[in-house]
Length: 92
Image 1 (tube, helix red, strand yellow):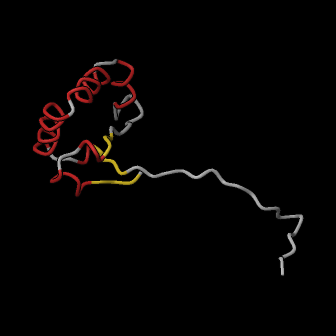
Image 2 (cartoon, rainbow, N blue to C red):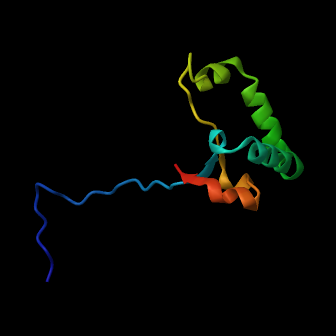
């Protein structure tokens, strides 16, 4: 026995999206930021270099400025964080 489909509400496909666990850097203490930075330099040097390059971009600086810019948050994927910092994760 099949259900009759109401023509006003045809079946639709929705694009699935995934949520990524991240750590928002501005939510970390200075000590935790230093720990994360040392971890990145030691285990993920390419990611660390990419962050240095991005953060030295004047446009990125303006976007992240809380007073003159958008106050954007910098987040890093959970996979790059040391285990003790994973408790600070957020889902985006």
